Every structure is written in C-alpha cells, then in structure tokens.
Image (cartoon, rainbow, N blue to C red; front, side, top):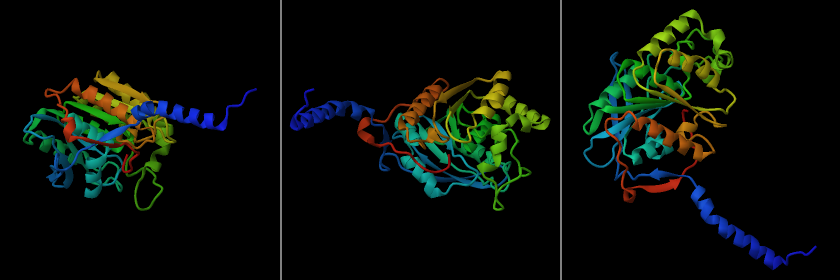
Length: 321
C-alpha cells in the first residue's frame, strides 16, 4: 500500500476545501438586514373595542404604495415588550424577509392570558388589523395575518371577526382557539398558566374535546372567511400536530374552508419565526407562506431594490414562539 506524502496530503485536503467553498457559500442562509434609514420603525398604540390599549410597531417599504401588509402575532400567553417587538421587526428572519419582499410589516402584541387563557386577546389583534387597513399606503384588501402558536390561535380568531386576505398559522395552539384551555384547567404554577399545563390536551386531545368545546370550535370555524395555511413541524417533545391534524384541520375541512397543511419534518416549535438551528427550514417557510399569500392578494408585493438591502447571517432567534 502506497502512502501519500504528508505535503501532498495537506495540499490535497486544501484543494478539496477550496473546491467545496463555493458550494458551502451557496448553502449559507442569510436574512435581509434593512437599515432604519431605509425602512423606519414606527410605534403605534391602538384601543380595542372594550377600551384596552395595546402596542405594535410598523415598518414600511419605501414609496407611497399601495402595499400589502402582514400582521405578525407572537406566541405565548404574555404581553411582549416594546423592546422585543422592535427586535423582531428589525432582525427577525421572517419579519425582515417579508419587508424585503415588499410587504408593510406589523408586529403586534396583546393583553396577557397568563391568568385566564380565554382572556379576549383577539380584540387587541382585531384592533390592530382595523388600524392597518386604514393606514396610508396599505391596500385594505391585501392585509394578511401570520401567527405562531398562541398567536396562530389569535390569527384564526381574527379571521372569524374581520375580513383578511389570508392567514398563515404556525403550529396553532388550538386548545386556546377551541376554548379547551381555560382558567378552570389545573395549572402547575401559582403565578399563572404556561404551555406545560396543556400537556394532557396535546397528548390526548379527544378526551378534552367535549360537546361544548366541539360546539364552540365548529362555530368559530364557521365564521372564518379567509383561506388558511397551517405550517407544522414534526419535532419537539410537545408537538401540537395531533390536535391540529385530528381535530382542527378535520373541522375546517368538514366546514368546507380553504385550508392547507404543510409539514416541515423534524422542525421544532417556533421554526416559522426562525427559532431553529435549521435556517433553511425557516427560509422555506417564508417562501411557502409568501407564495400562499400571493394567491389571495389584490395588490402584490414588489421587492425592495437589492441596493437597499444588506444580508446578514441567519441564526436561531429567541422569544415567544
């Protein structure tokens, strides 16, 4: 057996890496980094119909429009701070991709549901959508809603309360939407409810799908007027796939709603907002979601000039899922 001389071996490995570099560079996933001087950050407070005020932040493409707009609703039960809203709007991979694609991006929050999972947080989301529909430069017929987890539950409720062009629901916490998760649910923490209190519902949803929960779910589904995309990962210790496939999706199809399900194998909860080591999956979600929205928009987005958009490495983000 002939051994390669060390010098030749080193040169061979170096040549191999040099040959692979272009391919590796092509595989690197980036996200748009759009300076505030190009697309500023506007802070807005709105009042729901019951008098409760909530906050959202807006970024607009350059120009007068008209533009489509996407309203983002975060996950979790807690109210998001202004600092976190701004961080998502400025550096969230999904948020900045939609802005670079030519959408007005609206990043909102809502009243807390920590003490009562059925607190009417949807009223805050509806107030935001109503405001956005009247914003200068926004085509009111081209407002879409994208939520994740608890925010996806809110997005579905919004679609039953006010007309929107389309909805993207990332792994909806549908036990909230269905009225299955309430203040009477046993909770593990004295300070309030958390996702861990829904574990039994996630594992055995049919046991909790009582006649009253079924009635409420069917009524809420009946009121949904927009086409819905459900995006779902298959990874994670508390996957919501069972309750969403076997109950929510089944009820929507039975009601004749326009609904699609896209699975993202192995992805963890929150991947749709970039909370995943696999940033290619987060990018694929944006591509799928944008394509879905464009089918129903009266005004199509026009991408920002590449001269206005820098690229930054895409990395897993943190925050409500």
